[in-house]
Image (cartoon, rainbow, N blue to C red; front, side, top):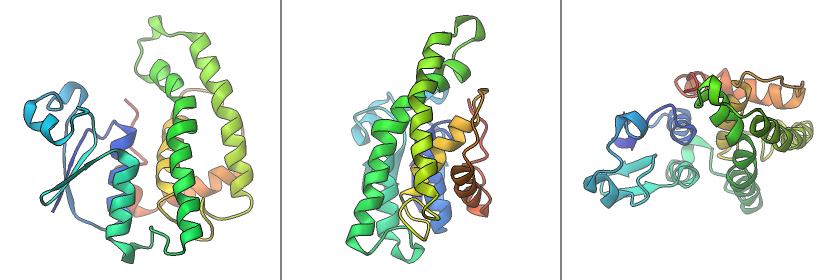
Length: 206
């Protein structure tokens, strides 16, 4: 059975949980990171020298970096349909997965840190405003993209949808004003309402 190290409060752990559940692959999740500790122990750092979560163990094979783990699971279980076989569709999916990490996550992270992980008396309104200003144009771009197709890489759910769905779970969970994004909302609801999303896209932010 797969072993996944990481607390569910981590967006990156939620990506892996959602992927495994969509693929119906059994796994054991062990809380690690933040108040759970473990990640700074020599034993853990021998498997993940970054001392971060998630960490996946598949037998004697270990892997870290959340989007890479999503790709690995999708490729290892092609029967689940998340790993595109057409090379152009695959790299379209790869593109959006990289974009989530380099653009969308970077834009929205500070608003999450300020609104959820910073005590109210220490929050920086300017930092939140800057994060919102950076994020909303990206969401407008996503909304326009999804007006033309059901899912990120075309007509069916693929690995591309998973990191961005986890990002939207986090963003729309923040106590902020959220402009209407009908195509983005339709897409997100189509994933969130699946039984496999339970425990990932309904996890409270913390």
